[in-house]
Image (cartoon, rainbow, N blue to C red):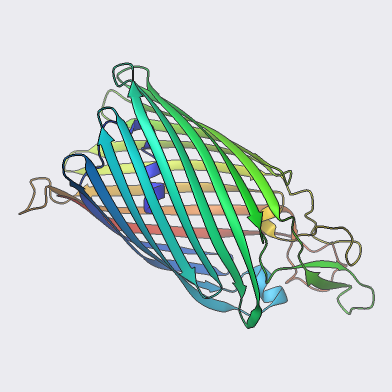
Length: 372
């Protein structure tokens, strides 16, 4: 989530500048759809030898799930994911090299990712071009099954361009391609199919996914600084993949500084997607086709997010070795509406006629930042 906070300012990042020395301590919380996730994160950045900047991040997710998938086909569970990240930036003239490594562990899944990126300023530092590549290797397990083991390999290729058009307007374009290969579904999730011999009228069997997936995404971003120091920022993101999922994201935000060290933020985000070609809420029979999924995240759905946030500069004059410090809080209210995923907690109706599922989620981020 710290990365998400920084992403809003990504259009303004210049290649010829090292990241500032700072430390961020975050607490994040998600509550929605029977799932709660919370935990801390600590990120520290430090420059050295004039041309280098190193970073380290520690991040924890504590998950308690009694989601609709869990309560209809399995038992609620609790788990914890711990993630460590290291990064190194090297600045030479007008170009910046980034190296990164991330490792995360939970009781049935481990992941490691290596990334490299380079960015270069052109045309009097008004234009920045960036290129990047990431390689991830994951190991998948299943609780209570010591025999089941599988792997996933992920590769990401990305290119970005940002341009200062006027003293007040910055625009950015980005494109990325991701290829996934391996075990790409959840080992616990099941599909349902019509079974007239079952008291419910349907039965379950394990999901079966393709073992490859390729996705493409393009985004256009802009940030406009208003005459009274406030700023507007907007984004449109287009997504498509080899599973026939298509998605559109629209985002509009406003940032307003106040006297006394306060900064207020508001944002609206709209997201919609179409279903994967092998998704069905209810299949006609067992093993109806080669690939079968009933993951609601592969269904047709849309979501609406409203964010409000505030930041207060608590150390504008500095204190000892700290140059500046801020306290920040953000709250998101998210509404999910599924168009072809039904709520199986409702019984007494014919299969396939249950009400469509939807839920609200609350996301809270509280963090402090110190520059030194």
